[in-house]
Amino acid sequence: MTNKVIGKALIVIGDASETVDTLYPYYRLQEAGIEPVVIAPEKRLYQMVMHEIRPGWTITKEWEGYQLAADLAFSEVNPEDYLGILFSGGRAPEYIREDPDLIKLTQWFFDQNKPIASVCHGVEIPARADRVKGRRMATVAKCQFDLEICGGIYVNEACVIDGNLVSGRTYHDNGHYVGPWIKMLEEAASIEA
Image (cartoon, rainbow, N blue to C red; front, side, top):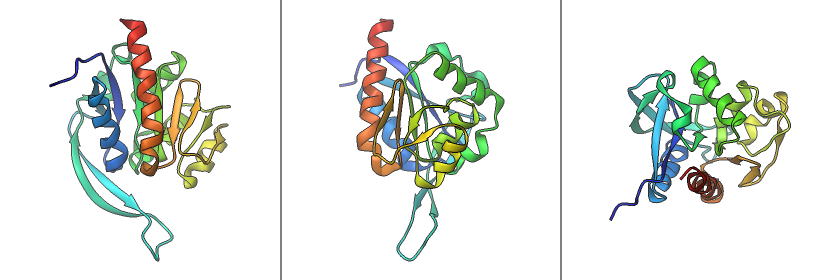
C-alpha cells in the first residue's frame, strides 16, 4: 500500500553529503506521504559518505557511503512547488554553499517562513545565505563557530525548534528532529489543500 502524496519537500545534497543525514529523512518523508526531491548543483549521481569519530581519533574519519541521484539542479527548482527544505550534513555544504541558486532558494524558504530542517554541517548553507541571525539552532559542535559568526545562537540539543526552523546536531539526532519537521510539512500541506 502506498501513501497518498500530500506534497513535496527538497533535500539538498552534493558530493560528500552524509549518508544517514540524507537517507533517514528521505525515507521518513516517503512514509509521511511527502515526495522527497533531491537537489544539488547538477542533475547527476552523487557520492555520499559516512562520518564518524572512531576511538583513538580526534577528527572525523570518512568512508564512502551510498550514491544518490539528484532529481534537479538548484537552478531548475521552483521553490513554490515545495512544502519545505532540508539541508543535509557531511562535507558537501562547505563546497556547495557558494552556489548562487542555492543561496536564493535558501533565502526564499526562510523569507516565506516555510518548514526548514538542518542537521550537522547543513548549517553552513543558511549561515552563508545570511538567514541565521538571531536564530537558535543545533549543529555539530565544530560548526558552532560558523553559526555564531553569522549571528546565530548555538544550542547543544538533539532537536531545536525556532519558529519554522528545526535542527539537529548529527545523524544521532535524526529520531528527534526529523519528526517535528515532518509534522510542520504536514501542517503546511493541510493549509495549502
